[in-house]
Amino acid sequence: MTTLLEVMNPRSALPPKKTVLASQAMTTLRGKKIGLWWNEKVNGDVALNTLRAVWSKKYPDMRFADFRHAAYMRAGHTRDTRVFDALEELKVDAVVATTAD
Image (cartoon, rainbow, N blue to C red; front, side, top):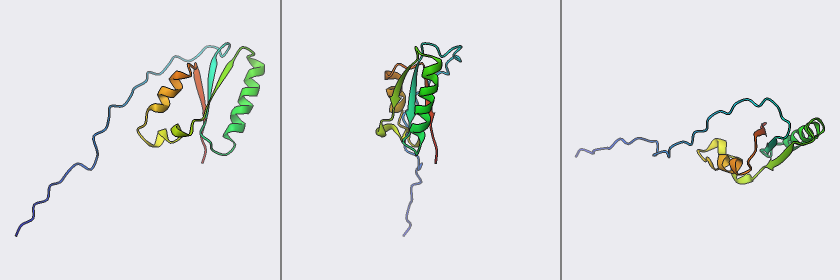
């Protein structure tokens, strides 16, 4: 008796990736809204709070938006693009993210 095996592609069908165009470099930080993305790693919040304090003194009209929603923390390890949608909703001019292991 012969057994027939069907060889299948081990990768699942992937949804199309969302593409984002690179933005132009900012010429100034004055009046900008900066997203501070903490990935909940140790002392990342300290780094972002220090940056906020320094930039707030240098650019008094700068605004900040904190981003640390746990549902998006592992977005880089999956194909989950909701993190980019959430950042777009904050309407920030730039994002500073902390990472560490």
